[in-house]
Length: 369
Image (cartoon, rainbow, N blue to C red; front, side):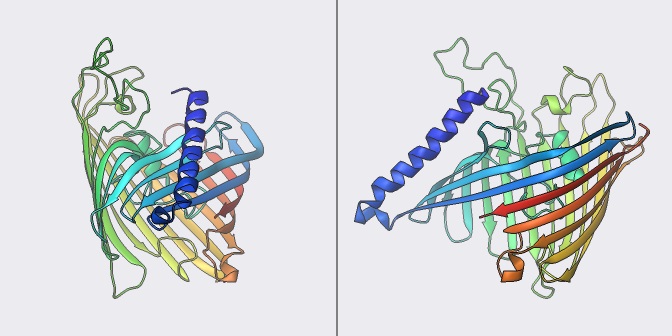
C-alpha cells in the first residue's frame, strides 16, 4: 500500500466511524449500546546525536510520534480499534483489529496487532517508557524477527483477571504490509491465489505474567515463541533465504511505569535461536537489561539502565546505557504521570568489534490525552 493510498484509507476509516457514531446517536435505542472513544498522543523532541565511528554530528527538532486512536465498541463486547500515526507526514496504520470480549476476563482479537512478545517491547506503551524509547534488546529482538513495528497479522486470545495475564498469538510471523510477505489477501480471480509465493510456515507465541498481592508493583513473567515464516528479517545476507527461529524472554518488574512508585527496579532477558542453514551455522542471540529509577519529588523521577545484546554466542556483546530525567506537570496535579511529560535523556551505544561509539541526547515533550 502506497503512503498516499494508506493516508486516504485511514482518513476515510476515521471519518466513517465518526459518521456512524453520529447517526446511531440520533437513534435513542442504539445510543446506549454504541460507545466511541478517541485518544491521542504527541511526542515532540529536540535531539543531538554524534557518532565516533564516522565523526558525524546531527542536531534538530523532530516529531517522534503523533498518534490518533479510535475505538468503537458495541454493547461493551464487540468492537474495532484503529491507531494511525502522522509523524512521517503521511497517515500510516499502527494497529487495526477487531475484538470481542467473551466475558469480563477473556478477549479475542483478529487483525494487525501487538501480540505475545517480550514485555519490554510492544507490550510496553510508547508513552510509558523509562526514557524516550523502548529497550534496545527488545528492538534487536524485533528487528531480527517480526520487524521493528512489533506487530503482525493474526489472531490472539487474552485472559486477564487483574493479577494473572495469559496471551496466545497465532500469526504470520513477518509483520510486513507487503501482500507477497505477510498481508496475504489474494483472490481466486487473480493470476494465482497463492500470489506466486510458496510458504506455509507461520508463528505461534505465548506470554504470561503475574502481579503479586504481597508486594505492590511486583510483576513476574515471560514469553516463548516459534517463528516459521523464514521472513527476510531473519536472513544472514541481504536477499538471502530466511531462517526459522525460536525465542524467549523473562522479566521481573517492580514498578513497571514511570511515576508509579518511589523506587522502581526492572530486569529482563531475551534470547533467540535461529535454525542452521546452508549459508550459516546455528546462531544464538542473547541480551539482558537492568533499569532503576527513583522519585526525586512528586512528578520528577531519575532513571538509569544498562543493556547488553550479543547477536551470536561467538561474538562480544553490544552495550547500551541510558540516563533520563522525567518531569510530569500532570502528576503534580494528581493526574496520570504520562499525560504531560518532559524527558531529558542521554543514550550511549558501544557496538562490539566495530570501534567507536554512538551518543544521543534528547529533550522530549509528551502530551497524551
